[in-house]
Image 1 (spheres, rainbow, N blue to C red):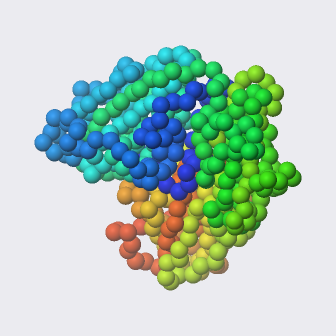
Image 2: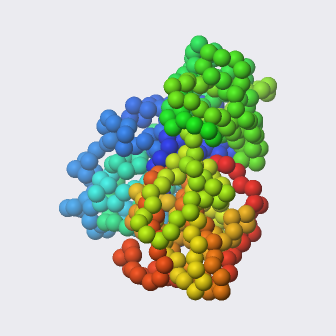
Image 3: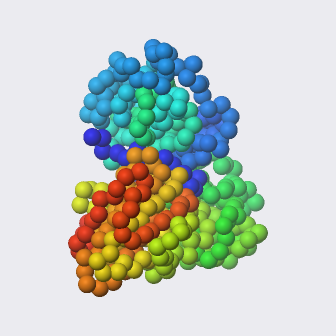
Length: 474
């Protein structure tokens, strides 16, 4: 079984969980601007907004030499098998253009060596009516922290890794997101010139007058020593609790937030050294533009970083503000702009088997003695549903994050005690990149939902002992 989870990326432009992983492994190098993939120099932006990017999304099924009469029907795998596991990765060259590849299982892994002082772009083209494919890029010695992910819904996925100063062994994983027919695909690896610090594609933005406009954030930024970066933005969903998150890895950056045209800093600043983040919390106002200045404090090495901008979080962002609900009609909510308040020890002993580091919101249901609570979550995004008896210790009653169609989750819990039990229903997700609107329905007693019966959990809650009570925001 492969040690990664196959996910769609929805919600915000910025894939914040991937930022920290990539920054921690490649924080001290600096790219030349890579060739723009399909009109964008930002691979993760293409990942998070693949449907809205427009332009040529690559060849359709007729362009793929699958060797089968129907590109969506898997008649046989390709000549690179077996390569379903990282340790079975098929060796390929770089650059390379491989056509006629076939996905008949859940994953195809490839290994390659990227030359020193270079950048790398990897693209897969396919027909997603057969099976939607995702693309992950890893360092060969670490398959737990992807350098880049592209997980959209079109017929192409593309990642760019521009920070390869030394010769680097890499793994490319082509993953099938959900159950479906086989899919033919084409794999292209491009190598372009890298080098020393030349800043990023937003240059020139070295002064307030040159502030580069950004939307909900940007990836692939580089802070060169002695060269400040200025950005301008407006908050799409303004209000109290708005946040600017700068992911910079182990080397802190000096971050200053002001209203555009003003010099007085605003907001509350927090440095999370363990997570490699600087978070600025402030109250944003409709119609007001803001300015962010980022500076490398001393040192000789450049720092790679990224920015995410979040509006006001939902009112039920944590357990202290949990929204009370009762059995009846579904309630609608969203995890967009929410904070990651609750995450879990990764592994089989956790509430869902996953860390759930995504944004989360909370609902409160009181379950009568002897009654069975059932809950069903429906969403387009790959969200998780967790029932907690205690939020401080993340004491788990039951949780689910395994729906094969990625349309929702269902859980059930029987209160065997002699008194009513308050249950906190946490809507969460595996990655910080995954958020979106949802419907949540709860009811007591039996009944069938989601096409089948739900296994009923019972007994005392299990506290999560793998993490301290405090968790990083993103």
